[in-house]
Length: 274
Image (tube, rainbow, N blue to C red; front, side, top):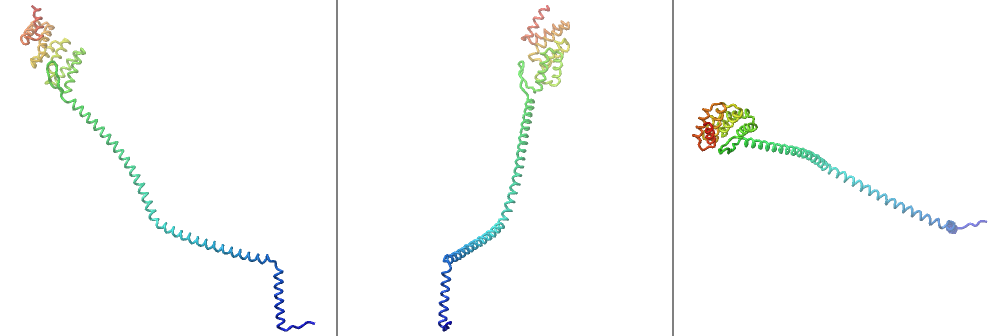
């Protein structure tokens, strides 16, 4: 027969039963399970804390990157005018370099042209100076006579004398005649007459030779070659078989130029005629 408990007793009994059940459960549950759950919770909480910290760090880094991007964009916007200006300056500098290269090329070309002009000027001045010197009168001292002649005058006389020395007597006579036509008042004129007479005498043109000698005596009676010209006239007269005229010429030579060598030769020839 079951006992009927009072309400207070029943409550106490129920409390003791529940406590006993709890103790039974506690003792029935292994101790490692209780500690494992705590560690897991702590690990989960720690992991969550680390994840949150990383999330916050990533967020901070993301915000920093965004700030840096905004700053970079602002800097790029600020630098864009400078970049364009630098590009323009670079283009201008390149243009200036090309222009400078062109100017240097032009300068070198102008320098070459200037040097060429200076050379041509020097050559022209040298040629002009040579021509002027060729036109300048030169002083000549010949057979005791001093006179001034132009270069072309001297060249013409020397050409005639060269033909005479080459024994080209007719050409020598012709060149002396041409010289006298071109330079009748030349200091060479008395000699041109004398040597023309000699060339004609050598060519056996005695009458023209006598005329040349007589022109010398008429125009230049005081010339050193005058006595020889008279002696040569007499020789031409002898060749022409005109001994009377030759005698008269020798006698005139002795009277006019008594102290000359030609006068001595005339005396000797006169003595042979006697």
